[in-house]
Image (cartoon, rainbow, N blue to C red):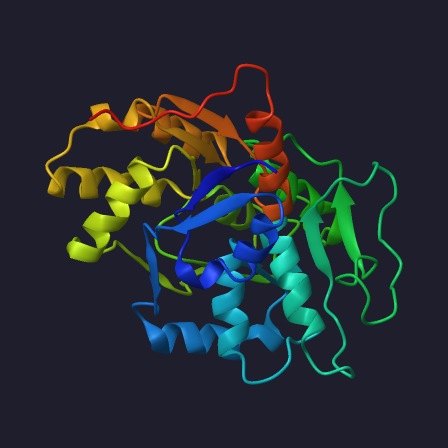
Length: 312
């Protein structure tokens, strides 16, 4: 048993089932959402994009939250014509779960993602509906990058080029194709730029909004509990890091209180933000909860591991 605490900063809607899994390993989970999920700012535009999916060649929901927002708003099963591209393991799992939950007679679209299969395998063969997340459903898989690698979007771009045959105009291989990118507010623009440069017509759609938590008595109590827990913080976005900094300021605390704190980050960009905020120790982990638990087991059981406490 690990006998430690994991402070989850994810939105409360993303933490389903985590408490039970962690408890079996001796990990207490403390929910401290540092961002909340709201509706998109332009609902008509979002719904218009969903209505256009049957005429769209590719849709990319950039996060598990984007996947959940898009599938929750669909009035019909996902159109088979529209391929789905995903970046990251969490998004890949979320899409597979969402597709599996559709009616049995709904055909699956192509699912395109950077993965861990050896190069040269090409398209996976279809598998029967059901089973473990339909892992054999059609898709393109490339050799995976290291956890949280900066080249996630580049890897998906490479997979997309394998999945779609170039058009008749060599200098614009994506000419005539339509792509939708669903995300929550501003984000990295590598994929939109690549697609547009190749001739595709691209629309970036806000599928949800990210809201900072209010500072009130409940938030203040959660902040003190998290700082004094001696556990590991888990961050899946830089926004959550910045929101924590804001809460500390509102609570009259400076960055020194973060020096004894330890954090797990699912991407190097988030890890950098944590170090800049003042966290004394930052480690990388993969996003799936099972991988987070594996990382905790490695860190907690390491020789010389100790439990820090917040200074009095």
